[in-house]
Length: 157
Image (cartoon, rainbow, N blue to C red; front, side):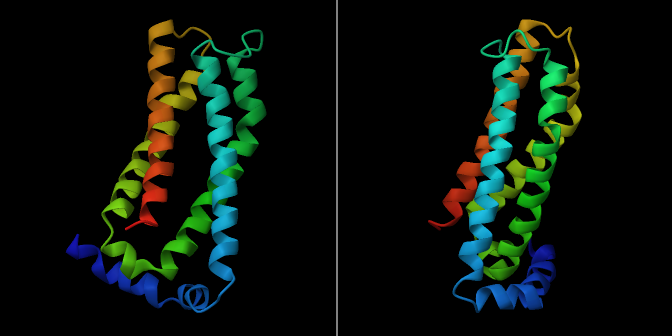
């Protein structure tokens, strides 16, 4: 982790990080946008995961649902990553010392990897077995909600 210290210091010293840190309103505004994007992302993921588990929208083909939700999923993810970086840059040195931040970053990396490698191919398939689709949905939910819970824990550390 010590190898990352210069990166954390650089982020902390950026003009954006300083501006957010020194403003009374920027952090809460950016955090609100971040949480809204996370909510939209989790909502789209939840709809697809429930469909993977056979718990809703059974008459709709899963690939059609995935295509319909794809723009919302993509743009909420982009918004979440951009606003998350801005929030991080405003308190990078605090984040460096934060175990919940580390957990969130690991969960986020795993969730993104799972989403783009496993989940996206699963929702495009019409021939997944019940066990595989349920396992995929449960793993997806666990990872994304793990990101959210770890992110919330950052505020308490």
